Image (cartoon, rainbow, N blue to C red; front, side, top):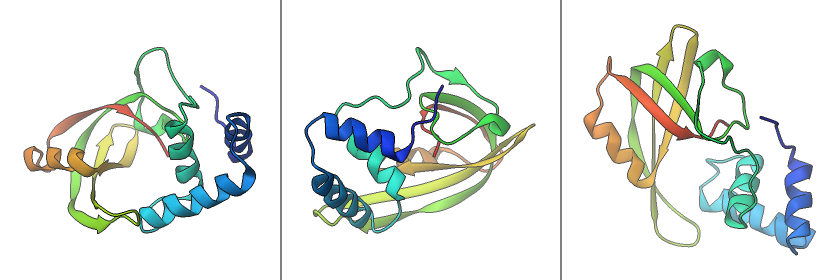
Length: 142
């Protein structure tokens, strides 16, 4: 899998007919919509996804050890033991509507990582407790 730079994403959005000004405005809107919880690159990836631009795609989900997780990987499967769970936080999106975000820390024999869950996926935490082994599928690494 290849990492795509910020400029490459912008170039692909320009090819889809967006102007630089539209891209910059949408980046700002996305970051504000998520109350600053996402980065500029995160906003760009969401915008690209909304415009059906595939940035990283494996032919099928690939199982990865935690030590091998790198930003930009997509459609990843990772197993780990839950070592910490952080409560669900609600926020209001700039364009209206409520959102939810929560996270957990998982570890395997190679390392530790945070798994962030958005909106209705946060409900999964009701069924998970510290010490459980979980399988995270179709994950995107940031």
